[in-house]
Image 1 (cartoon, one colour):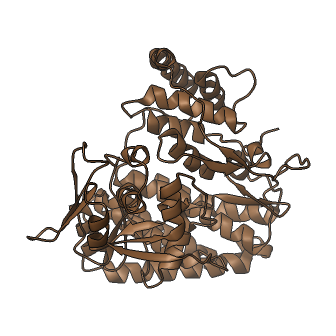
Image 2 (cartoon, one colour; image 1 turned 180 degrees about the vertical axis):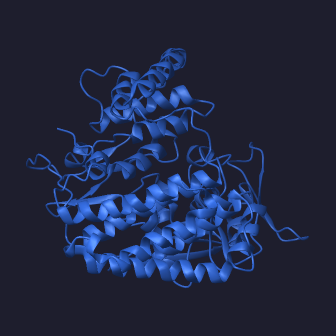
Image 3 (spheres, helix red, strand yellow; image 1 turned 45 degrees about the vertical axis):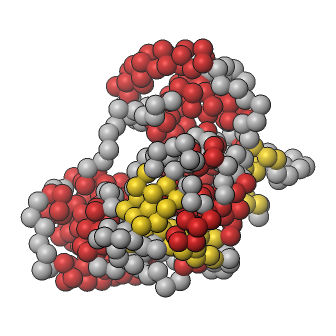
Length: 467
């Protein structure tokens, strides 16, 4: 038995009338945003929240006080945000959408209940000058002129990649570029470093005055909608605990690598671990079942992606966790790797990895057998979707905010998610997951490439036929 956790959560399968009522209120807010032009988002959302306060009789008595409390909290955030941005009017849809994105992040910080017992990490600050001295063939640090930068590469035979450094302490790199420097500092094997180059995109974490920080992030090559905002950099520990994997516990400031010892170990050995329990607006990637810590499908997706792309060598898994279905994240991962130059090789590696962690059924002989089954369960998924525009990012963040509000509500009222798994002795004994022994097959990769157009056509037909 495999449980699709995302479907379980989406379908509100807890049979709790309090949650049904609260989700109905959240849906009303989200539908208002989806149906309204951007110029009306602020006023119409505020109108609904004010109605929650003015007409409590329309809210079930069991959650009336909670709904009023949350409405007051969100209204305070929206009013403060309006006051702060009044001098910078947004006159077009993209501008209003960017302002809405900022407001969503602020609301998420306000309603999110920070987890207690933040894990303790051993933090390191390694100056670029120190890394350059230890690894001169792979990193050089330049502070001359108006644009401090790094040059990085996998080895002496590779081409240098220039990394422009931030001029502001409020703006730091995270993600791929930070991992490149982390792996150089850790002395990672060439193959693990080469898999990171060149980075797919520019990921930034920022705080402080948003227009100024956004301008600097854009100068570094980031998209404004993809910036992760923090209230403060004063305590780096919680920032590290919010990373999904230990190898992502790294940032680049203007002059140093900030990381944990755990990240250095992961970069050095290639063995990665899932870390984050609650990432606020970006969701929770773990679930507890009978006191056991399990990684949800999005967390498994992140672990699998790193192995398939060769950015890591192994991770630990358990037989009980095999029952958490990867679900829609099969499709999400295929859409991501489908844009890469070696997409067909990566797709076959993913199929093999899925087979090794219990995500492939006995009658599924190829990756397309798996994908046809999963797309049949999620026919709305569109492989042709391009990058989101500013309004699309605002819609996406609003759905994340609704899920966060639901999660906070369930935690407040101790509402279970209705998860049922089959237990057996030893089902929490970890085993290592690797792709050791798997050999790429060029002929199989060609067949996968040839079958891709027919698969996409089947997906379009399923999407067109959905009710």
